[in-house]
Length: 366
Image (cartoon, rainbow, N blue to C red; front, side):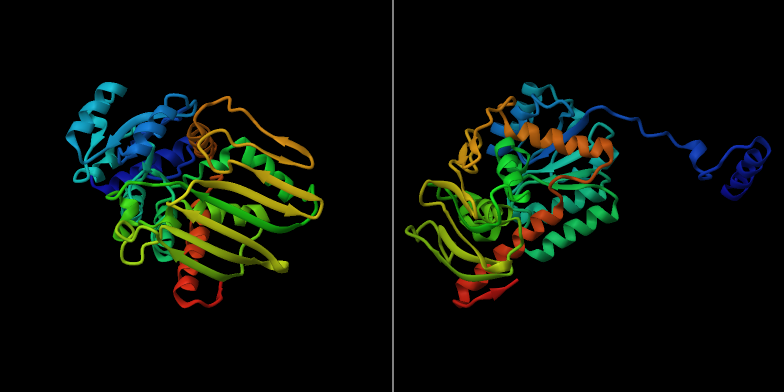
Protein backbone atom coordinates (compact mmCIF):
# COMPACT_ATOMS: atom_id res chain seq x y z
CA UNK A 1 0.00 0.00 0.00
CA UNK A 2 1.37 3.40 -0.94
CA UNK A 3 1.91 5.84 1.92
CA UNK A 4 -0.83 8.17 0.66
CA UNK A 5 -3.39 5.40 0.33
CA UNK A 6 -2.41 4.04 3.74
CA UNK A 7 -2.90 7.48 5.26
CA UNK A 8 -6.31 7.80 3.63
CA UNK A 9 -7.33 4.36 4.88
CA UNK A 10 -6.36 5.25 8.42
CA UNK A 11 -8.38 8.45 8.25
CA UNK A 12 -11.46 6.55 7.05
CA UNK A 13 -11.10 3.98 9.85
CA UNK A 14 -10.77 6.76 12.37
CA UNK A 15 -13.76 8.66 11.06
CA UNK A 16 -15.94 5.57 11.14
CA UNK A 17 -14.96 4.42 14.61
CA UNK A 18 -14.66 7.66 16.52
CA UNK A 19 -10.90 7.25 17.00
CA UNK A 20 -9.06 10.47 17.81
CA UNK A 21 -6.11 10.34 15.44
CA UNK A 22 -2.97 12.19 16.49
CA UNK A 23 -0.69 11.02 13.70
CA UNK A 24 -1.05 8.72 10.69
CA UNK A 25 2.00 6.86 11.93
CA UNK A 26 0.87 6.52 15.55
CA UNK A 27 -0.97 3.24 14.98
CA UNK A 28 2.21 1.70 13.62
CA UNK A 29 4.67 2.98 16.21
CA UNK A 30 5.75 1.39 19.46
CA UNK A 31 4.94 3.60 22.47
CA UNK A 32 7.88 4.53 24.69
CA UNK A 33 7.88 2.40 27.82
CA UNK A 34 7.63 4.41 31.02
CA UNK A 35 10.60 3.72 33.26
CA UNK A 36 11.15 4.04 36.99
CA UNK A 37 14.93 4.13 36.57
CA UNK A 38 17.04 5.63 33.82
CA UNK A 39 19.98 3.89 32.19
CA UNK A 40 23.17 5.96 32.29
CA UNK A 41 26.14 5.63 29.93
CA UNK A 42 29.41 7.13 31.13
CA UNK A 43 31.60 8.62 28.39
CA UNK A 44 35.23 8.60 29.50
CA UNK A 45 36.44 6.22 32.20
CA UNK A 46 39.09 8.26 33.98
CA UNK A 47 39.41 8.86 37.71
CA UNK A 48 36.10 10.67 38.16
CA UNK A 49 34.04 7.98 36.46
CA UNK A 50 36.01 5.13 38.00
CA UNK A 51 36.35 6.28 41.60
CA UNK A 52 33.24 8.42 42.04
CA UNK A 53 30.47 8.17 39.45
CA UNK A 54 30.43 4.40 39.00
CA UNK A 55 30.40 3.69 42.76
CA UNK A 56 27.73 6.39 43.22
CA UNK A 57 25.59 4.71 40.57
CA UNK A 58 25.52 1.64 42.80
CA UNK A 59 23.71 3.79 45.39
CA UNK A 60 21.23 5.63 43.20
CA UNK A 61 17.52 4.86 43.20
CA UNK A 62 16.37 6.62 40.03
CA UNK A 63 19.18 5.66 37.67
CA UNK A 64 21.78 2.95 37.15
CA UNK A 65 24.96 2.27 35.20
CA UNK A 66 23.74 0.83 31.90
CA UNK A 67 26.63 1.44 29.51
CA UNK A 68 30.09 2.86 28.91
CA UNK A 69 32.01 4.62 26.17
CA UNK A 70 35.78 4.23 26.16
CA UNK A 71 38.67 4.18 23.73
CA UNK A 72 40.59 1.65 25.82
CA UNK A 73 39.62 -2.01 25.23
CA UNK A 74 41.22 -3.11 28.53
CA UNK A 75 39.02 -0.68 30.45
CA UNK A 76 35.95 -1.87 28.59
CA UNK A 77 36.69 -5.47 29.56
CA UNK A 78 37.37 -4.60 33.21
CA UNK A 79 34.16 -2.57 33.54
CA UNK A 80 32.16 -5.25 31.75
CA UNK A 81 33.20 -7.81 34.36
CA UNK A 82 32.97 -5.55 37.39
CA UNK A 83 29.54 -4.08 36.62
CA UNK A 84 28.06 -6.84 34.47
CA UNK A 85 27.61 -4.54 31.48
CA UNK A 86 26.31 -6.32 28.35
CA UNK A 87 28.42 -6.13 25.19
CA UNK A 88 25.69 -4.26 23.33
CA UNK A 89 25.98 -1.39 25.84
CA UNK A 90 29.74 -0.95 25.42
CA UNK A 91 30.84 1.66 22.87
CA UNK A 92 34.00 3.31 21.64
CA UNK A 93 34.45 6.77 20.16
CA UNK A 94 34.09 5.50 16.61
CA UNK A 95 30.71 3.78 17.00
CA UNK A 96 29.41 6.22 19.62
CA UNK A 97 26.62 7.61 17.44
CA UNK A 98 24.98 4.18 17.14
CA UNK A 99 23.99 4.58 20.79
CA UNK A 100 20.92 6.30 19.35
CA UNK A 101 19.49 2.85 18.63
CA UNK A 102 19.92 1.52 22.17
CA UNK A 103 16.78 1.82 24.35
CA UNK A 104 18.78 0.78 27.43
CA UNK A 105 20.57 4.15 27.39
CA UNK A 106 18.46 7.12 28.49
CA UNK A 107 21.19 9.53 29.58
CA UNK A 108 24.72 10.09 28.34
CA UNK A 109 27.07 11.51 30.98
CA UNK A 110 30.05 13.24 29.34
CA UNK A 111 33.09 12.86 31.61
CA UNK A 112 35.84 13.93 29.22
CA UNK A 113 38.42 16.75 29.17
CA UNK A 114 36.67 20.13 28.66
CA UNK A 115 37.95 20.46 25.09
CA UNK A 116 35.79 17.44 24.15
CA UNK A 117 32.59 18.47 25.93
CA UNK A 118 31.01 20.38 23.07
CA UNK A 119 31.46 17.59 20.53
CA UNK A 120 30.10 14.79 22.69
CA UNK A 121 27.24 16.74 24.23
CA UNK A 122 26.04 17.67 20.76
CA UNK A 123 26.48 14.13 19.46
CA UNK A 124 24.61 12.76 22.48
CA UNK A 125 21.75 15.19 21.95
CA UNK A 126 21.64 14.34 18.24
CA UNK A 127 21.39 10.68 19.25
CA UNK A 128 18.19 11.55 21.09
CA UNK A 129 19.56 11.12 24.60
CA UNK A 130 19.39 13.36 27.64
CA UNK A 131 22.81 14.73 28.54
CA UNK A 132 24.74 15.32 31.74
CA UNK A 133 28.06 17.08 31.36
CA UNK A 134 30.89 17.47 33.83
CA UNK A 135 32.16 20.88 34.79
CA UNK A 136 33.61 23.08 33.44
CA UNK A 137 30.86 23.04 30.85
CA UNK A 138 33.11 23.94 27.92
CA UNK A 139 36.05 26.04 26.79
CA UNK A 140 34.14 29.09 25.56
CA UNK A 141 30.80 30.84 25.81
CA UNK A 142 30.15 29.98 22.16
CA UNK A 143 30.67 26.29 22.85
CA UNK A 144 28.27 26.42 25.80
CA UNK A 145 25.61 28.10 23.68
CA UNK A 146 26.02 25.50 20.92
CA UNK A 147 25.56 22.70 23.47
CA UNK A 148 22.42 24.29 24.90
CA UNK A 149 21.02 24.85 21.41
CA UNK A 150 21.67 21.24 20.37
CA UNK A 151 19.85 19.85 23.40
CA UNK A 152 16.96 22.25 22.93
CA UNK A 153 16.70 21.42 19.22
CA UNK A 154 16.58 17.70 19.99
CA UNK A 155 14.19 18.20 22.92
CA UNK A 156 16.66 16.64 25.37
CA UNK A 157 17.53 17.97 28.81
CA UNK A 158 21.04 19.15 29.70
CA UNK A 159 22.44 19.22 33.22
CA UNK A 160 25.90 20.27 34.41
CA UNK A 161 27.61 18.17 37.09
CA UNK A 162 27.73 20.72 39.90
CA UNK A 163 27.38 18.20 42.71
CA UNK A 164 27.43 20.91 45.41
CA UNK A 165 24.07 22.35 44.36
CA UNK A 166 22.52 19.00 45.34
CA UNK A 167 24.39 18.78 48.65
CA UNK A 168 22.54 19.49 51.96
CA UNK A 169 25.08 21.82 53.59
CA UNK A 170 25.25 23.92 50.44
CA UNK A 171 21.46 24.03 50.31
CA UNK A 172 21.36 25.35 53.88
CA UNK A 173 23.74 28.27 53.35
CA UNK A 174 22.06 29.09 50.06
CA UNK A 175 18.72 29.22 51.88
CA UNK A 176 20.20 31.73 54.34
CA UNK A 177 21.29 33.92 51.43
CA UNK A 178 18.14 33.56 49.35
CA UNK A 179 15.76 34.31 52.24
CA UNK A 180 18.07 36.98 53.70
CA UNK A 181 17.86 35.30 57.10
CA UNK A 182 20.93 37.31 58.13
CA UNK A 183 20.03 40.38 56.10
CA UNK A 184 21.59 41.39 52.84
CA UNK A 185 24.98 40.06 51.74
CA UNK A 186 27.74 42.64 52.01
CA UNK A 187 30.84 40.71 50.95
CA UNK A 188 32.01 37.22 49.91
CA UNK A 189 35.42 35.58 50.11
CA UNK A 190 35.85 32.17 48.52
CA UNK A 191 38.80 29.92 47.72
CA UNK A 192 39.07 26.45 46.21
CA UNK A 193 42.23 24.58 45.33
CA UNK A 194 44.59 21.72 46.03
CA UNK A 195 48.23 20.83 45.41
CA UNK A 196 48.29 19.00 42.09
CA UNK A 197 51.65 17.34 41.50
CA UNK A 198 50.80 15.77 38.16
CA UNK A 199 52.72 16.99 35.13
CA UNK A 200 51.00 15.36 32.14
CA UNK A 201 47.29 15.45 32.94
CA UNK A 202 44.80 17.37 30.81
CA UNK A 203 44.66 19.94 33.61
CA UNK A 204 48.23 20.86 32.67
CA UNK A 205 47.47 21.10 28.94
CA UNK A 206 46.01 24.34 27.65
CA UNK A 207 44.55 22.86 24.47
CA UNK A 208 42.53 20.32 26.50
CA UNK A 209 41.01 22.84 28.87
CA UNK A 210 43.76 22.94 31.44
CA UNK A 211 44.50 25.69 33.92
CA UNK A 212 43.11 26.05 37.40
CA UNK A 213 40.37 28.60 36.61
CA UNK A 214 38.47 26.16 34.40
CA UNK A 215 38.69 23.32 36.90
CA UNK A 216 38.76 24.41 40.55
CA UNK A 217 38.07 28.02 39.63
CA UNK A 218 34.44 27.40 38.82
CA UNK A 219 33.91 26.36 42.46
CA UNK A 220 35.18 29.77 43.58
CA UNK A 221 33.01 31.48 40.96
CA UNK A 222 30.01 29.45 42.15
CA UNK A 223 30.81 30.50 45.72
CA UNK A 224 30.79 34.14 44.67
CA UNK A 225 27.64 33.92 42.54
CA UNK A 226 25.58 31.74 44.86
CA UNK A 227 27.03 33.35 47.98
CA UNK A 228 25.81 36.78 46.91
CA UNK A 229 22.67 35.44 45.27
CA UNK A 230 23.44 37.67 42.30
CA UNK A 231 25.27 37.72 38.98
CA UNK A 232 28.51 39.75 38.70
CA UNK A 233 28.47 42.95 36.70
CA UNK A 234 32.24 43.26 36.33
CA UNK A 235 35.66 41.83 37.05
CA UNK A 236 37.46 44.65 38.86
CA UNK A 237 40.88 42.97 38.77
CA UNK A 238 42.51 39.59 38.21
CA UNK A 239 45.94 37.99 38.13
CA UNK A 240 47.20 34.61 37.03
CA UNK A 241 50.51 33.09 38.10
CA UNK A 242 52.55 29.94 38.52
CA UNK A 243 55.41 28.88 40.78
CA UNK A 244 56.06 25.88 38.50
CA UNK A 245 56.49 27.20 34.94
CA UNK A 246 57.96 23.87 33.88
CA UNK A 247 54.49 22.36 34.46
CA UNK A 248 52.12 25.29 33.83
CA UNK A 249 53.54 26.45 30.52
CA UNK A 250 52.63 29.12 27.97
CA UNK A 251 50.74 31.27 30.43
CA UNK A 252 48.67 28.42 31.85
CA UNK A 253 47.46 29.43 35.30
CA UNK A 254 48.45 27.47 38.39
CA UNK A 255 46.89 30.14 40.62
CA UNK A 256 44.29 32.79 39.83
CA UNK A 257 42.87 35.52 42.05
CA UNK A 258 40.09 37.93 41.09
CA UNK A 259 37.83 40.60 42.50
CA UNK A 260 34.22 40.46 41.29
CA UNK A 261 31.74 43.33 41.49
CA UNK A 262 28.05 42.63 42.04
CA UNK A 263 25.01 44.94 42.03
CA UNK A 264 24.80 47.30 44.99
CA UNK A 265 28.56 47.51 45.35
CA UNK A 266 28.90 43.99 46.79
CA UNK A 267 32.41 42.60 46.24
CA UNK A 268 33.58 38.98 46.09
CA UNK A 269 37.24 38.06 46.36
CA UNK A 270 38.04 34.66 44.92
CA UNK A 271 41.15 32.51 44.71
CA UNK A 272 41.83 29.17 43.10
CA UNK A 273 45.03 27.17 42.89
CA UNK A 274 46.72 23.95 41.86
CA UNK A 275 49.59 24.97 44.11
CA UNK A 276 48.04 24.99 47.58
CA UNK A 277 45.27 23.37 49.59
CA UNK A 278 42.56 26.00 50.12
CA UNK A 279 38.86 25.45 50.57
CA UNK A 280 36.53 27.92 52.29
CA UNK A 281 33.59 30.26 51.77
CA UNK A 282 32.86 33.31 53.94
CA UNK A 283 29.62 35.19 53.35
CA UNK A 284 29.46 38.44 55.31
CA UNK A 285 25.86 39.53 55.84
CA UNK A 286 24.31 42.45 57.72
CA UNK A 287 23.67 40.29 60.77
CA UNK A 288 26.76 38.08 60.79
CA UNK A 289 29.02 35.80 58.80
CA UNK A 290 28.35 32.38 57.30
CA UNK A 291 31.58 30.36 57.27
CA UNK A 292 31.96 27.09 55.38
CA UNK A 293 35.18 25.10 55.77
CA UNK A 294 35.59 22.92 53.84
CA UNK A 295 33.33 24.45 51.25
CA UNK A 296 33.65 22.28 48.14
CA UNK A 297 35.13 18.97 49.28
CA UNK A 298 33.70 15.60 48.22
CA UNK A 299 32.58 15.07 51.80
CA UNK A 300 32.72 16.63 55.23
CA UNK A 301 31.33 20.05 54.39
CA UNK A 302 30.47 21.96 57.52
CA UNK A 303 30.17 25.50 58.71
CA UNK A 304 28.82 27.99 61.17
CA UNK A 305 26.57 31.02 61.20
CA UNK A 306 24.81 33.15 63.84
CA UNK A 307 21.82 30.87 63.21
CA UNK A 308 23.77 27.79 64.32
CA UNK A 309 26.00 25.03 63.03
CA UNK A 310 25.74 23.88 59.42
CA UNK A 311 26.62 20.21 59.48
CA UNK A 312 24.49 17.64 57.68
CA UNK A 313 26.04 14.16 57.77
CA UNK A 314 25.44 12.37 54.50
CA UNK A 315 22.83 9.66 54.39
CA UNK A 316 24.29 8.81 50.99
CA UNK A 317 28.11 8.74 51.10
CA UNK A 318 28.60 9.91 47.52
CA UNK A 319 27.44 13.44 46.72
CA UNK A 320 27.28 12.34 43.11
CA UNK A 321 24.53 9.84 43.97
CA UNK A 322 22.25 12.65 45.14
CA UNK A 323 23.18 14.71 42.09
CA UNK A 324 22.35 11.95 39.62
CA UNK A 325 19.17 10.90 41.42
CA UNK A 326 17.95 14.51 41.43
CA UNK A 327 18.69 14.88 37.74
CA UNK A 328 17.10 11.53 36.88
CA UNK A 329 13.97 12.42 38.84
CA UNK A 330 13.67 15.71 36.97
CA UNK A 331 13.74 13.81 33.69
CA UNK A 332 11.26 11.18 34.87
CA UNK A 333 8.86 13.87 36.05
CA UNK A 334 9.38 16.11 33.03
CA UNK A 335 10.61 18.97 35.19
CA UNK A 336 13.45 21.46 34.56
CA UNK A 337 16.92 20.39 35.61
CA UNK A 338 18.14 21.86 38.90
CA UNK A 339 21.48 22.80 37.32
CA UNK A 340 20.80 23.32 33.59
CA UNK A 341 23.23 24.19 30.85
CA UNK A 342 22.56 27.87 31.38
CA UNK A 343 24.22 27.60 34.79
CA UNK A 344 27.42 26.28 33.27
CA UNK A 345 27.26 29.05 30.66
CA UNK A 346 27.10 31.72 33.38
CA UNK A 347 30.34 30.45 34.91
CA UNK A 348 32.20 30.31 31.59
CA UNK A 349 31.20 33.92 30.92
CA UNK A 350 32.92 34.82 34.19
CA UNK A 351 35.95 32.64 33.36
CA UNK A 352 36.44 34.44 30.05
CA UNK A 353 36.08 37.84 31.72
CA UNK A 354 38.61 36.95 34.44
CA UNK A 355 41.18 35.86 31.87
CA UNK A 356 40.58 39.09 29.94
CA UNK A 357 41.00 41.19 33.08
CA UNK A 358 44.22 39.35 33.94
CA UNK A 359 45.60 39.83 30.42
CA UNK A 360 44.73 43.53 30.13
CA UNK A 361 45.04 44.67 33.73
CA UNK A 362 41.74 46.48 33.30
CA UNK A 363 38.19 46.26 34.62
CA UNK A 364 36.03 44.02 32.44
CA UNK A 365 32.26 44.52 32.36
CA UNK A 366 29.91 41.58 32.19
